[in-house]
Image (cartoon, rainbow, N blue to C red; front, side, top):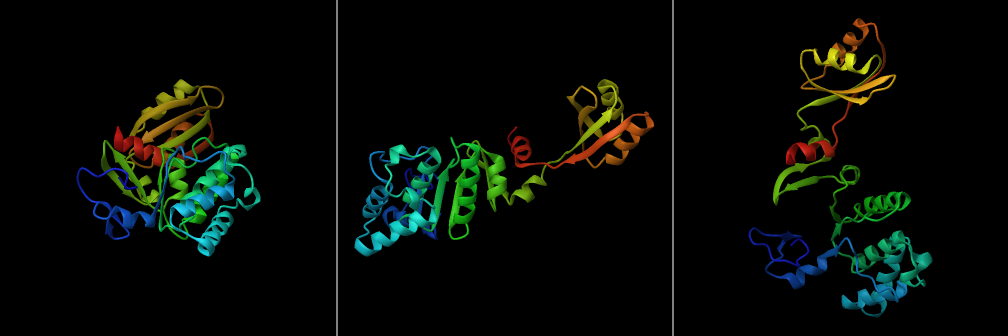
Length: 259
C-alpha cells in the first residue's frame, strides 16, 4: 500500500503531502520501492541496467548519463559498471538494485528486508550504506531484524495484527519494558543461588543461564535490586564475579507488546 501497488481498504497514504490513492502516477516518481527479492536482469551489465531503468523513468541524453553516473558513485559500484549482473556477488547485486531504485532521485526510499541473505561483512557494508542514504532522503525500512532497526532508525513502528502498537525513537521504546533484568555471576551452587535470590523482596523470577562454575542466573524484577542481590551473594559467603543490569532492547519490547 505504501508503494502504491495495493489500494488501502481504509485510511489514507500521504506521500510528501499528497494522497497516494488519488493520483498514483504523479506521486510515484517521489518514491522508490525495493522488494526483498529484487528483480534484476542478469544478462545486462550494471551500466546497461541503470540506463534501462533511467529510460523507463523518461530520462534522456545528458540527464540520463548524469543520473547513472550519480547512482554508480553513490552506491560505490563504479568498479563493476561493465560487469554482467549475473556474475556479481549477493552484496553487489543488492547495491545495483538500490542504485536502480534511486536512479530517478526519489525523495522516499522504501526497502523490504534489505540485508536478507547477505553475509556478515555485506550486512555491515549495507548498514553503512543505508545510514548514508538516510542523510539525504527519507528511508523507510521494513525488517524483522530488530537489532538492525535499533541501529539504523530514528523512529520505529511496531505493527501487530495490522495495528500500530508502538511508535517512537528506539531508546524511548526500549524504556517501555516494565521489568528489569540483572545478570548475576557467582561462585556458588546454581540451584542454591537461584533459591536465595528468589527470596529477595521484589524479585519476580530467576532463570538459570549457566549451571557450571561460576554459575550464571538472570534475575527479573520490577525495579533496580542490584544492591540486594549483591548483599545476598556476599551474606551467603559466595564470591560475586559479575553483576550487570541488562538493557532492554527492541526484541524485548516487541515480545512484550505482541505476546
